[in-house]
Length: 258
Length: 258
DNA sequence: ACGGCAAAACTGTGATCTCACTTTAGCTAA
DNA sequence: TTAGCTAAAGTGAGATCACAGTTTTGCCGT
Image 1 (spheres, helix red, strand yellow):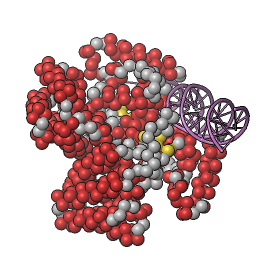
Image 2 (cartoon, rainbow over the protein chains, first blue to last red):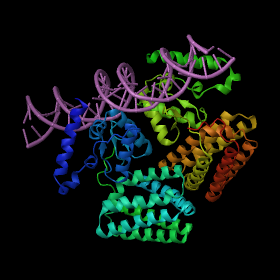
Image 3 (cartoon, rainbow over the protein chains, first blue to last red):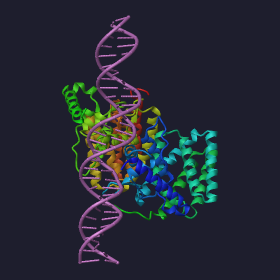
Image 4 (cartoon, helix red, strand yellow):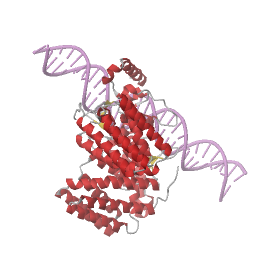
């Protein structure tokens, strides 16, 4: 079967899925929010596939255990399997995907409690350190962006808009860490968010999650205003610990084992 | 040109390079120590290429700035470009390789002083933490292996055998961290070693490097014997800091810029 | 001997095809 | 209705080819 044929069929599937409306949001797969790539010149198809899927994973478009097929991904993204395979392999290397069954299918990882603990402690170390370093690189313009992200997050929390909340949550944190001007460190942190991205969407449904999280965020803002690195670090660590708590009490339900 | 032809030609090149003897060790490239894969069934060619090259990078077989060609790698390893491309892309994702010129050639990264500092601080955080956690998971059998690696390292240091020293240095550290039983953390630490691997071989030429490093290692052994997590952490951090010092005073010489 | 230009070699990228294997769908028979 | 088997569809893995670049080589003219 030709790529074009699969492409058209997949587009029809996606279209019909979307037309079913938000009532069918539960059986949406991650592809429903992803369209064909607008192939920009100067960038390889592979890197665009990689970036697109990484952002989708961080944003929680895909649920834990969801399987990603090479041909399906290629069809939806409007390219061939070759760049997709490289991108998926890269995501596997990042820990954002894992090989699953005897069929070697790639799927979004289903994290064990031990792995969650592992990731939580890594995050407190790396993000706490990044926050402390970030104080030195903080500038008024950057501070305004962070302030803005925090406000948007508060507004999303008040409105119960999980999408907007998660988007600005990542923006808030990454803006802080970027001030540390540590590209390698930033890459590791992004890798950790890639792993927890598919879970965070379930965490925000935990009772009082928004309140606890926003408490930490406001504490972080206050520490930023005072230029208090130690306090900022503690606020970030508190945020991470609370989030991990909400993930632990809402464990993955459809955890098919190998 | 067929893969087989390239393969034979490359093998001849490697052979002739080896026959030139150890006097020509300076213009050895990383491939001279790598032979064709013994394709084990049950594992994909891609993963074997990945593991082979990752170990080679950690062991410092390739020097910073050295370029890795897809077809050349495929020829030496006795496979086609497809698995090699995926493996190299994965290594790029790990930070073990970087795309270089307008030709998009993959090469071993040439780290800037800022990146070295970045990596050093990440290592002190992650490896320090891993060391502290490892105390709880320490068992007599494991301790014996670590003790053995330390002795071999001491012997290599006395003999001035850099190869043997580096091999047991990685074994020593990884055995400690593995006792923490944190797979994700272990992966991140391995990633950092992948980045500094090509440099460490130059660091060991620094005066007194062996002495300083072995001091830290013996301190770590003592802390392990006492079950003193804080002391072990400090010993590890000291080792990392000293090594970073030796890397900073011996900066990469052939740092071709883009 | 040296500058410049053209051809050859080499680079990664992406598409396509085949293969071996697994999963699923559907049909047949009890 | 259900168990079981078979065929179809789907899966990733790997090899090969074509292509558009870049880099290197080598030759020719000055």
